[in-house]
Length: 557
Image 1 (cartoon, rainbow, N blue to C red):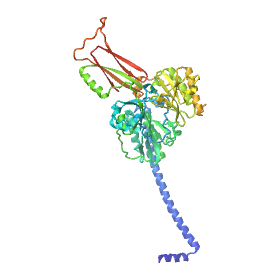
Image 2: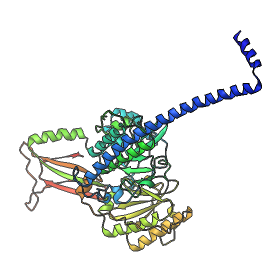
Image 3: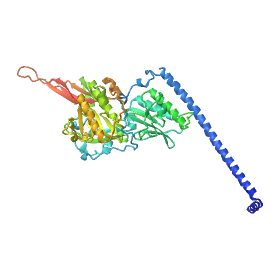
Image 4: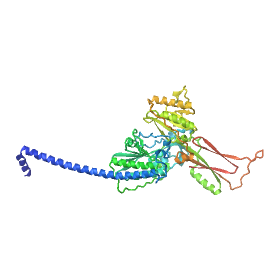
């Protein structure tokens, strides 16, 4: 009935009246929609103003703290200039390690081939350009053996050369207390902002809100680093400047890269976090929750079983390499000898990293190293990275074409081209094809003189010219000669590992046997020699004791 009346009413209206009614309805709809949009806009603006006000207060507070830090009120560090801060090894050598920058995929578990397919690797083939260690199967836990595939009893007496690759959590757990404190402080600062979350992965931690990535937390060597989604150019002329990673695929969304090498740098990161929150309208919480973390150090086997660390098996250790005594037996012997009142002598072995070797090298080697490295870096797109035993150089597509290593006191250059390429030339290179570790770098050239430095630069020119890489004429040479640092200083910095060998001699309680006398009436003595091999050269320590004395050896690290 109502519908019928409406139809009659429409028929009674003229076309002009009907158009006016329709127009009026449209206007009313537009006004209602406009009021709704205006309300939403004002509300969003109010929220943004409130967020800006809170962030401004936090910014002022951080700036005040930075001013106090500059005056030295809360800290005991030196002047405010960044160049006076303690430098990591990467900074000492002006190295920006980018080997993994262009790879966004998660690292998969190391491929553990069946032990029977692994060939025996001679000790001399364990080249110093690789950080390899010996894994004793008898000392390995059952869980780790099952994961590696060494479950049978036939592997109990075997040893293998292995390489360890640490994930983010493994590096964090094995880091110093200072690094752990900075990480906890950073995580609590992130917890201040509403909706900001952190997602961990194998080699990094991602900071995000919704689906937008706002930052990355990574390790560079032993240094904790943060990358934010900020424009580095805006802070290039300020004290908050960082490293511009905009050319890296991995950090394309987060190009503002900062190394947390000190408490002051951590304060800078907190300030940048305020800028990040303001750009993305992230509100700070009124009562943020304080986070706690369990970061106790774990053994590498535990980290490997928990998938926080990867082990790559390189090959079997030959029988010619001497065995080390198991730790359990050493501890038992040591306790018994303490009761007998024996004497203990300690022998220290130093495992020096590539960085430590460069720092403690002579001035001639440093000068050659700096000259050749400047020549390599002068090519367009070439970048480098440092590991424990080597320094590698890459072309833009992450193809390694050259590495540096130090053999004794000699700087050596390894190239990716075959040594046969230089047969019959003036370049006296060495063929390393038969060595497993140098499969990708088969050519080695020893640099012992200024002429050798000149030839090394020519070899680099030959390799890069074939790859079509052109030199940058505008490149300015940089001094890559680091200042000398003492062994104790480098040990504290983690660039030299110390292994202590204890030699204990027990005086027997029973009556000693009569020593043999030679024809001339002199008493002969038995000479016991303990031989240990370090990274650089073999050092021998001889302990002379008369017959009837017992000599045992223990090793601690």
